[in-house]
Length: 273
Image (cartoon, rainbow, N blue to C red; front, side, top):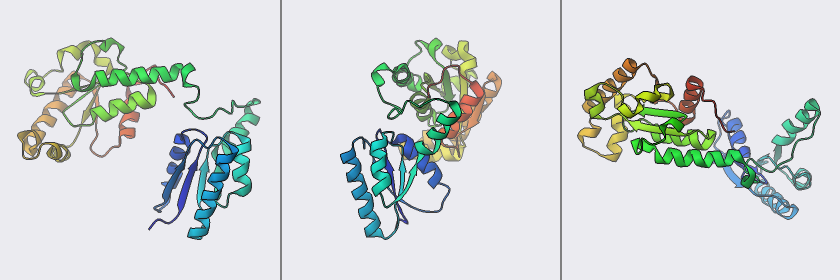
């Protein structure tokens, strides 16, 4: 049974409201019911939102929590005057004090993705995603000079989701290469990667966790056996140490934590926010 209903109201996608709101909610031991209400960009839509929030308040007998990033003041005013929930206006909390401190007015722009046709950052992000998809799992050796980051590690150590996160979240062109038996026999990184050692970052994982992950994909195989996983992880870590590249374990880390460590270590020049 959920303990409270939480609404995320935005005149854009609502990503900012959800990200910020969920970060705050994570500080509390509760299991809220989350309701997303994006694209609330007219007064009529705002009145519909108010009716939905107030109906929830009446049915549940508690105030819903409402995180909002509404930019349009006319739309926001509808919520401020009629909403029976606990309204947390995130832009109002931070933007207005910054306007006073900086001595300038904000753009009052709706959302991070508004007017994308004119956004170089958005174009860069799309290019980075396409690049990362084309260079996933060692598919291509072309244009590695253009890579911002190259991840290496044994199969199923978290390379693909991390490269896609770096591309989508930060606009980085991220390639990834699996370390395979031929590399372990040579005791060297794949030859195609050697000229780009400064861009390389290694991922490793505990053999036990690796065996669990691989068993979900190929149960009962040598590929997933604990003995083989121990051999591959040991060989990969030894190779990374010999090559002098930085690496970290993904065993207990989220994709966000892994990506943040990579950014701190490699400090790529180009980042998109």
